[in-house]
Each structure stands twice: as C-alpha cells, then as structure tokens.
Length: 154
Image (cartoon, rainbow, N blue to C red; front, side):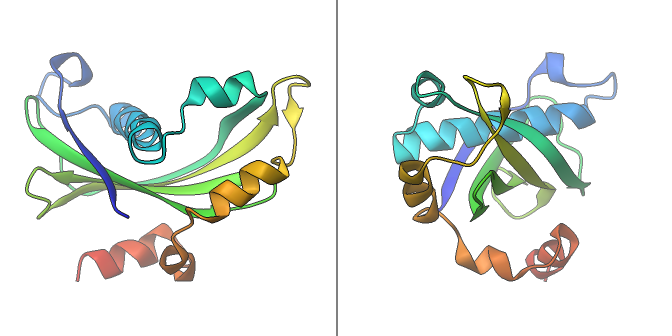
C-alpha cells in the first residue's frame, strides 16, 4: 500500500527567496509520516505514548534535489524500510503535486525509547508483530539512500 498525502508549502516555512527552508523539508516529512500512520494504519502517536512507547531520531540522511516553493502543493510518501528490535528505518520522499519530480528523499532511523525509563529499549513483541507487517521488503535491497535515489531517477 502506498502511503501518500499532499500539503501546501506555507509562507512561514520559506526563506526570502520563497524556497522551503532545508529543515522544514524534514518537518514536513516527519509530519506526513505521523499522518500516514493515523490515516492508513489507524496508529496514533498519542496511543503509543500512552503505552510507554516513544522514538527519537538517531539518524537522518537527506538528499535535496529541487526546491519546494511557497504556495506549491507537494506530495509526500513514506514507507517502513525495516523494523529492528530497537529501531525503525523509514523512507520519506517529497514530490511535486503531479509526482513527476522528486524534491527530496529522506531516510530516518528512529530509535525506540521506553518512556517509563527514558532509555533505549527493544520494541515490545506485539509492536514488532505489527511493524513487521508494514515493512516494504523491496526497499531493504538498497544499500544507501543514494542507491535508492539512482533507481528512482531512472
């Protein structure tokens, strides 16, 4: 299942040249991922937090290709690359509205944190069973974000 939503680039997220700020790409993509979990999988972060699960970003790798411009509609898709015992690897891609041009691609590693202890921890078994069902196995064949991007750009 392709998880994708579209967003309007906001004035407050842009620089004086009407380009989306570099850090805002990450904000848009992370927000899209949260929206995708709720919309397509009925998984709400507030419910996970209530169960003591939390994640922190431990690694971002982003490649910027084309500027996103003020008032432009961009579409963002996301996919779970891999669920690990204590982390999740996620891909997020921002396209133009027609999805004919990639604006940026982001690979993020989310490390699981037990909210009761505040420490890194393995995911509970029930969560792993759920997450493993969402993995996009095809994405696991790419060694890097640049290798994935090379295929997307062909």
